[in-house]
Image (cartoon, rainbow over all chains, first blue to last red; front, side, top):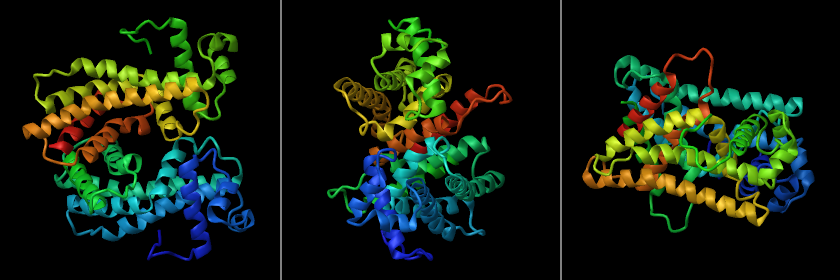
Length: 206
Length: 206
């Protein structure tokens, strides 16, 4: 899961987050422990605690990184001079393959969102959750802006923005729920998912 | 949440399930206890245990009932002689208001699905989970049949069935995630959600 655009994160921290995402996904966020993640890494718990103060912090950082992965790819392809439907298509063509590339992170987010507010305990965790919500809003804002612009321009039909935005975002994230990588999947399947999802989303709004 | 078509379920059992759905939704499936549900009901734990052997069984029954609510409404409106896009529209116009009417049940399902296999402990619970999966497959099958028929007839465009089906189902269930009933919501908002969602889904496939 190497990211060419990786920021200032150390390789060691990145490796722990990758392992945590896989273990949280496989065992479930509630069941998985720091011990399980250390075992998966073939490492000590000390190495994990060196970077992350608690399981809650580690989980929040997995969620934050999930949002960061897609934001970086998608923000890049938006052209303020392009038509909103063209931008939206390009955003989805960037979003879907990135989600599939970093799938464990997004599967964890999907497990975590419904309960994330109920389990905030420390101030550090609450602050991280606020950042997760802010990052999600910022990311959704990219899609909201194109939807709005498209309705103003008459490229998308007039419709309730909340219903349209959330319907479209769920459609675009559907692969997080149903997709599992398989050795026997057809060549280019990830691209097919991206293209068909983009088609569906643009038509849904048009 | 009275259901006109209620089957052989006793009013007492139904009332406990309604309370359990609300408490699971509010506190989270992992945190909520039989004690919390009894308190919400103003009742004893004994009354709950009279109908449900464990919290796991009660949770499974909430999920099964969620599937049952929508299956009953949606199966009714399918006309084998009607065009697939017309059927699909009518199915969504039946599905969405029923989901909003029984929202706590569906919010609980949404919390439960990702982890449901990890937490099966007793044979009774495992059997219930198998039934939940079978019911979900049966329900999805209603939508899959119309999608297939529509592609054969040329009413829906040729596309990968898995991507289309799951994208459409997530779109149709988006209100479970984002919708919360509000005292100040516009009159007829539930119907607007149903109509716009149906429009989006049919266009996404066409």
